[in-house]
Length: 267
Image (cartoon, rainbow, N blue to C red; front, top):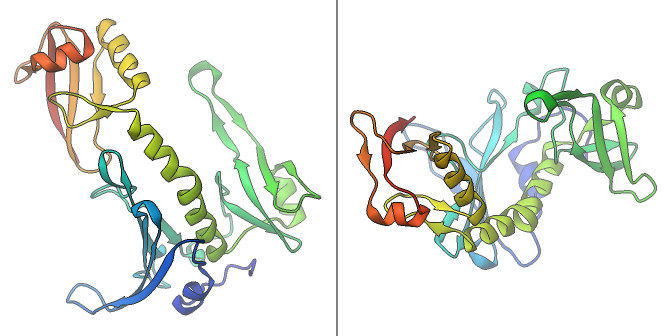
């Protein structure tokens, strides 16, 4: 793996992006249209209906070399980490657009002295309200057991020559995290969630309790879709002009009444 900011070719990325164990691999091309030139694609298919597709539809002048889409089967049907109309599941950054100061974020891969590590905690503002503080520490867990987990300041990282790993290393790590962490977490969360009667949302037991506390406190609770669509606002006891009273099943679900619902365009 290179530690420089060179922009890899599509051929190099296809060669370097690994096929996870138990997955099948398909490389294909999307034909040229009136909106875009032809481009290469990679599809990785695994158990549980996991499909990871990468479209190499960027270029040296784009902020992203490629966009990724991650889909999987869940107890509530097909799900994706894409946010409709907002963003794809992930992107392969164009290192030529990073500039001289490359920020390190949680889960980024870094390179130093022939070895790789993962950012466990990034620098920046942490916490909320009065407890909000600025942290100048970056915590890195090195793959090499000799190093383990180490805390650095940004200045120390720069003096040591620790750099962000190349986009191929980042992509392999990101795919691995989707498979091993994010998809299992999403399936577990969906499995213990319930559909709210009369509304196109699901809630975990914890979020249901939060909604009840919010409404009992005579505050509004707002639902926003993950992508473009219709948002919903719930409040107790009274409704504004254009609001409608919730279905009896909705009120029974939360154990509160009367509940009024308003909607808005979440664009």
